[in-house]
Image 1 (cartoon, rainbow, N blue to C red):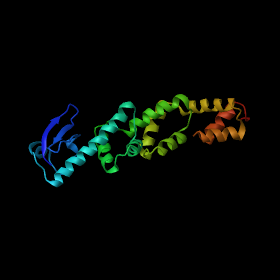
Image 2 (image 1 turned 90 degrees about the vertical axis):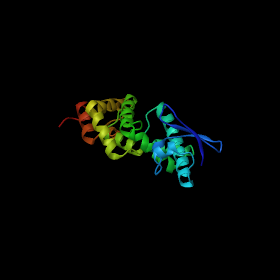
Image 3 (image 1 turned 90 degrees about the horizontal axis):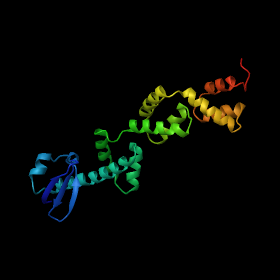
Length: 206
């Protein structure tokens, strides 16, 4: 490959114009064996390095699309990977791009969890086990999900959420064992459900 010109943009990407008439953007960070110094100083590259430069361009294309999604809302890695695969990008180019975005803190599963939990609580009253199941089902790692839940319940009372869920279920006509089962399904413990029911006088206190 013969490169006619390179131009560094404000975002740190490099616009590469080749002698073949094509132009593309690439991030030098994605070069594997070719040093940045040699890339910027050389004009002609052998087949191996040419392939490496083109691969860097393909990874950069994945990065740009990922950034487009991130600009709209918080994303999590597994979900973003699926979106990019659905768009026709190849996994071997997606993963290095997502690694880079995580490195620069633009992509963060922990930040996504915090955002998701704070949004979720607006219209849902759910306990820890239900929320954990939801996060794991999205492809969030268990350690990351539990850390986010620890932070969430340090700031939000699970008992208050249980009371909100309890009142909603009672309005729907739930009582007795069906009420307890529904509370458990929403992620609250049998003990918590029992306390709320007894305090409400539906079951006699011991």
